[in-house]
Amino acid sequence: MICPSCRAQVGPRDSDCPNCGVDLALATALAERQALASIPARKDSPYFADVILPRFGEYLLRTGYIDARQLEVALEKQVEFEAEGKRTTLGQVLLDMGVVTREQLDLASMQQVQELQNALRQMNQRLEQRVVQRTRELQQATEKLAELDQLKANFVSNVSHELRTPLTKIKGFSALLSDGALGPITADQKNALDVTGASIGELERLIDDLTRFSASARGEMTLRPTPFSLHELADTVVRSTRSRNGRHEVQILSEIPASFPRAMADVEKIKWVVTQLVENAVKFTQAGGRVTLGAEERGSRVRVLVRDNGEGIPGDRLHELFEPFHQLNGGTTRRHGGTGLGLALVKRIVEAHQSKVSVESEPGRGSTFSFELPVASA
Ligand SMILES: Nc1ncnc2c1ncn2[C@@H]1O[C@H](COP(=O)(O)OP(=O)(O)O)[C@@H](O)[C@H]1O
Ligand SMILES: [Mg+2]
Picture (cartoon, rainbow, N blue to C red):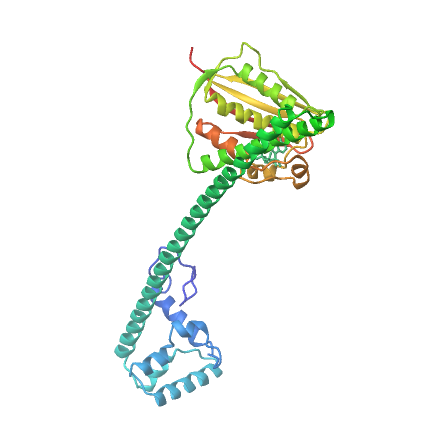
């Protein structure tokens, strides 16, 4: 920093200039005022500082220390001095003219500083009020969002309920038709009804996802943890996924040995989670690819892994996967269907087990989804 009076170097803690001895705060305030006073105010658009920092001459006029004529003369004199290369303050000119005493000038300058301080305090107060108001607005927006989330969950819940009722009838009657209970049917009709049956199964599973999602969104998730064999769970999932994806040429296999330690969790929910991960892996892997279910021991915990060598996920989009209704690749997902709810639910279920889902992925090379569970104590 530099002393505004003698231009000597001063330290940040100095209150007086070590060179000329001037009070630095006062000298700075005076220098500022001088700088401001030297900027001509434009008639049409006032210089901003003039609005909040009234010029000293105008202040003296307004407070009655001088009159308009005296100010005019003093300003003219100041301009003359300036033209001669002598820089001088308005206060000095007024002193020299003898219209004010030094005491009056000091008093006026102190009063002006006080006025400025008050203005500053008011501005701070207004600022604080604005912060309070903005905070309130933000709070209201957050509440609104939570309400919308609730509405969405209710909507999903109502729609899935409404869908299930007619679907039950469709399912029942097509089963009766297919079994020949309503009269004999031809082989072609039987084939058509089988396809109908498979589609009904798909619809049922979609409605299931929606129902689970809305239940979990309302915070309705109860866990019934029991010890279970990961080997058996993986085998079941592999078999059911294989049969559902009969024509899909992706290899699905489990590497979890029968001797693997038993885990402790809500087995039905974990089976659902693993099924979702395996189905995604199959869905996003081209023909000839492979999906592997594995598990690793980690002390008192086990890690369950679902690996694929499919299309992979770009690193910058990994965080989106677990958002409800988010699907990354419009093309593939439209081809394979899905609601974009699977991973959102997977996340909720795994987190309800005090765990976390991890994803590692490389576009074009494949993905690995995994999560940990506690080992069942012996
Ligand atoms: N194994 C995977 N490989 C590549 N992308 C995946 C994989 N699993 C999930 N994704 C991406 O994450 C999105 C969300 O998955 P999910 O929530 O299960 O919804 P859905 O399966 O209904 O599309 C998928 O649409 C897909 O874009
Ligand atoms: Mg899915």
